[in-house]
Image (cartoon, rainbow, N blue to C red; front, side, top):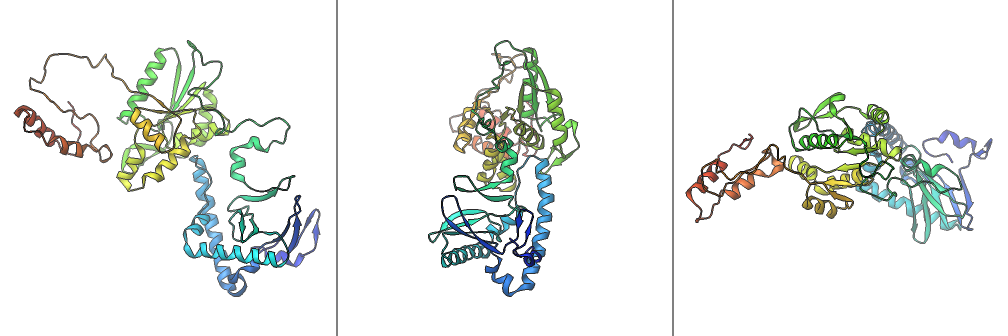
Length: 434
């Protein structure tokens, strides 16, 4: 059915090219007996009919947006993100566009009712939808370029909208076989560890840890992963790490010590395939983590993830982005994981409150070979003594803690007050070692 983007085909109305017939409009009867008027819909667009120059201008701008969207989504795919339509986003954000879509839908169903049909099937506005409008069935198939959607009818007469991105993420749904298709990553039951023959007491495993945080960074995530590798190897497991040291990188904005890997998908896939791990752990949500997640989902490979730091709070403190936006990304990222490892019960509760429910506690410890208890008062001073261990940064909220601790109760000793004044005197941009 030709529309405003392929008007040249309208001259072939009624002609058949093999099994394909060109029609301006037709009436389709579903398996359940419903009569649906099928038409492109551009004839009900006032701009197309009465302001041709504006329609051509809009068509040119739309083509430019599609070209931008293609390159933008190529980058998103390499980073492991799903398809996202820029033009769809703009349509849904502009109030006039939303009002236009609503007017178009009502005009289409009114014409279908006038023709004695039960509903309408159309396109034109590129917004895939099936819903009831004023008692008439309104079906829009979207499009195959921008929305990547299509309208299909089952053998039972049920109308559905299918999306190509969904079919790509779950290719098993395309297999037309009598046997039940294997469950997708989101449908598999979540267990803390891969349920294969190697998961038994005393078994030796090949474990691959994918992390965007690694040397020469000095932070808690790197320290945790290095200690984890050391302890796992001491238990007899084979541990390999996939880190930014193997890739070209750029500095992370506002945190240049973190290096972001450029276009890592192909090499990440090869590394995982070559190592063939029994357990895959994705430690971070950066480019390497996204690429490993994409690889694992495409091959139905179980994996675990970790939540090391309060990333949404960090982004909000640095850039003012609402917490809900970042937690929505985290739900998408960690959703298919077998388990999300979190450091404290408080963090587990926070994640669950934001809809990330399959969390397990992965606590930190103290290296007793380095830190030993002793009863000698090395500082030769009275208590209490306040010690802050960590980077002095905006997301760590260390400044409020200094302000709070500097308000010492009147009953405290002069020594305690002196230590609090020393703590208050530490410059904010620096880190103090004790």
